[in-house]
Image (cartoon, rainbow over all chains, first blue to last red; front, side):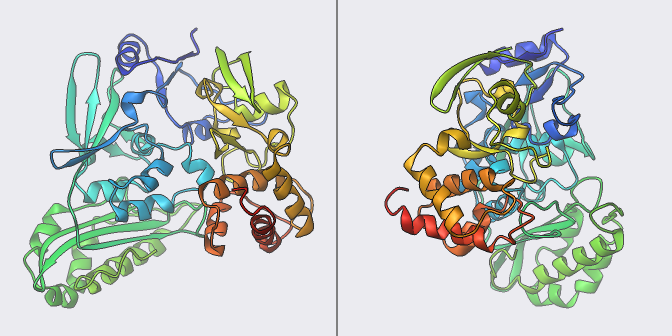
Amino acid sequence: MVDAYRPKTLSEALKIRNETDCLPIAGGTDLMVQKARGTGLGPGFEKPLLFVGHLPELQRIEKKEGYIHIGPAVLLSELLHNPLIPDTFKKAVALMASPPSRNLATLGGNICNASPAGDTLPFLYAADAELLLENHAFERRMAIEDFITGPKQTDMKPDELLTDIIIPDMDFPVTYYKKVGQRRGMSLTKASFHGLADVLDGYVEDLRMAFGSVAPTVVRSRDIENSLIGESVNSLKNRYQEILELYEPLIQPIDDARSTAKYRKNVCFNMLKDFLNHLEKNQGDII
Amino acid sequence: MKIEFILNGETQTIDVHPARRLLDILREDFHLTAVKEGCGEGECGACVVLMDGKAVNSCLIPAGYLEGKSILTPEGFKETPRGQILEEAFIEAGAVQCGFCTPGFIMAAESLLNENPNPTNAQIREGLSGNLCRCTGYQMIFKAVRLAIEKGEGLW
């Protein structure tokens, strides 16, 4: 059996993907841990590896026609240093893992790993991010919430690769990010919240709210958001109890080693309330 | 899989399983044992080396990722002027007790100072946030980095 492929170009990688049942690997920070077998043994992968992290086609960050395109093999540490990346997204990335891991981990890896606690995901959901998936012959573009179908599950087909992450280049005057974990460095998320809003003369023109780590996938409800857009900031502040009740059925956390369902739900409601209380002026991202 | 990479300044060609961890390659194949295995899952930083000048966890890197990369281990780094300053500063500040985490901390400190030669205390803490020490309580380690910045003025 061939143990691994190291293509030189994206088209070569897509050809291998078409002909072989293989496992794409970029930074490896999730896969090497998931498949670890202990000291000296090395990880045990069932399928041959397809190394894609080095492909130059997947490492670009560029602005084109109102969209920011981010290559899936861009490192988390590169996101932090690139002027095209929105500051509020950087706040979330800066709290992921540690500097040595951020020098390996990729944005595409965080998306394809599809963990409910993936910390890039709430922002990408809130920002209406789209993904480009390619096989050797075709490409398709889809919303991130359609791609991630469950915990660790995606709609990626066995012959496809994620080749582009596309974010509308929008400026939100009000941004809010909060991650709750056991400690500041190197911690996995118990619950997180990314809020984006545009407020004009005291009225909400745009409103996005995404919750991480409290359901099988990131929670974002366009229906609830649309029902609130157009209201005044003060009215949203006063109606927070009612808004919490709208989200209540969607926020379905679990008890696990990191936290309890009850705590996570409480924390979500507190973060939502805090965000609604800060809509009139940007407090910056609260960490 | 045949891999060519640079290790402590010398080009090396190895023929290894593509998923073999850089940590095992360094310790077992090259007998470079300054890198340690603490957790084996990127949480503790005891295995940190520099890859193209940046700190990375060697326990998370499969051999296939190494092609064309330049790896600097604590053994290679200690021969450099900056390595010597950091080593002295760690000794002087009492930042070493059992010593298991020390090589990783020194490599993480080098990576931090490469990027930011004049970090604030908060930035030092953030730069070393991927390294665990169970002896010192960290304060002497932070002190060691500040001492290295003073002693090694102009080196970073």
